Amino acid sequence: MKAPQKILLASLLLLLAAAVAGVFLTRDTGRPATLRQQQNKPASSQAPLVDEQPLRTARSLAPLAATAEEQTLAKETLHIADHDVDLAFAIAMRQATENPPPPTPETREIVKRLQDAKKTVAEEQQEVANLTNQLAGASGARKEKLQEDVDEVKAQLDPDLDDLEETKQELIRAGGDLRARIEQMKEAHEAVQHEGGPTVLSSGAPQPQTSFRRGLAADLAEWSRLRNKMAMLFSARTEAQDKAQSLARQRKELKEQLDTKREKAVTLRDRSVRKAAPKQQAAAQEAARHLSEERKTLADFDKRIGDEQELGDIYSRWNELAGAQTRAALHRVLLSLFWILVVLVVVVGFSAWLDHFFFKQLSPDRRRLVTLRTVLRVTMQAVGVIAGLLLIFGPPAQLATIIGLAGAGLTIALKDFIVGFFGWFVLMGKNGIRLGDWVEINGVSGEVMEIGLFRTVLLETGNWTDAGRPTGRRVTFVNSFAIEGHYFNFSTTGQWLWDELQIVIPIRTDPYPIADAIRKTVATETSENARLAEQEWQRATRSQEASAFTAEPAIIIRPAALGMEISVRYITRANERHKLRSKLYHEVVQLMGHKEATVRSAAEITPDPAAPEETA
Image (cartoon, helix red, strand yellow):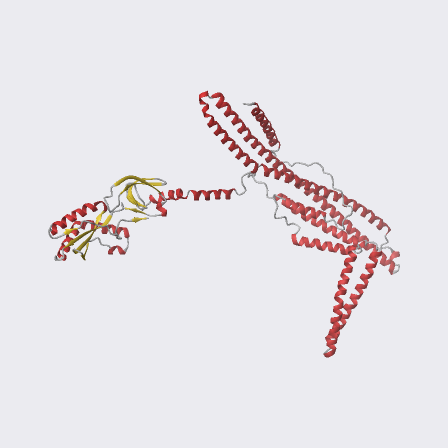
């Protein structure tokens, strides 16, 4: 082994040992990991009227819920955060009512215009009501006049209402009506809650990790995502804890103010107040109402503190679950690295072993096997590259689709072989062919010599109208012809053929006695064949039409150029055709005599439904 190979192999083994240690240390995925304390974010310089941050934080974390347990925690955080924000709205509304902002020159001017606008609108509305009442009891011209007045006042009322609403909004923007501003914020909050709901999770939540390996790249991305989720959960827990402490301080200040006011307040239980003037009694009632509202605010602060503490606990538990998932993801990353290093070690080690084996162990006359060494090395490296890519990037996302497309491509490319394979089953069936059969396939006739899974081999013979002797050539066909084409099998039951004799007699000779004699002679010679053929046809058709089939000889007399032509058709076996024809010619010659007839020896096989069976 060369020095660079030794160094590379040693480095890979060290990295492999480190990966094994990491896999061993992260094997326990059930024990959650902890994060270091993070610095708190600086608080905003201007606090909002209503603190909706708890709900925004819960909504931002809800899509991160992957497992069923995490989704349960996310729903709890959304519910508690929504309740916390509702309490914040109630506290803000009560404080805005009890402690309105001090007026400023700007707000005083807006308030004056608002009062004037309210007064104008009220007067116009009252005028519309009066005119409407008068219109109900009027008639004629007076009714028309009152209707015009109503329309005129309404036309002026609409812009005055717009001015009133614009003045209200101006006062809200100037900070002179905090209660109205808080009501607007609450309406917006309720609208969002009505649309999404406090417990609706995002449909795009990541799915839980499965046992299916996705590759090193996907595992690294998952590990990074989980670390970010842990950071967000840790920040949310810190935020909830800080919020609970801030609310506790505000509650403490409010409690001290409430105790001071309670000591100084004069209640209605005092006799001096019960005997005092109505103004003093009204002041005492107002003070008692203020104390009651502040006690309600104090109770709401207690509820909000409990909500924030509960949120902090839930975020802490969620963070522990995320920590366990992070450790599991890190374990998968290290495991992928381990297998990648194993592949590298095997490839490098196998290459070094090949060099040692071919150059050290083999004799010099065997070094011609260096080509084999190169092939083995390239093959091993190719396998290592493919295995490494699969470990890094994982199997293709559409593996089933890729396999399906590859299968479809192979099906198209190997169509003839596939159809030929199934054609073999057809040929082996009831209407197929057997070894030794005489068949005709795609115009080639011959004897079946071999029937394979994909191909059929024939020993070619001459045309069936000839002697049918072999030509000595072997013809091979793919078995697809049994499905896509057709073939003729002349070795079916009986192998019956229709043959024909043609005889010409002189013009002056009476043809009918000769024809009758010839018919009787042919019928006598073919009677047994006719009987067997009719029986086989009847069994083959298995229908009532089979009774119309007859194998009796048929004779036709027609004029010809040299006299009268007598044609006799008869049934015969395929392998006895030539022998029977020669015998019949001999009988006819003896019957007619050498001086009275001329025998024309040409014969034809005419197509007929009873001809050799055509099998497809």
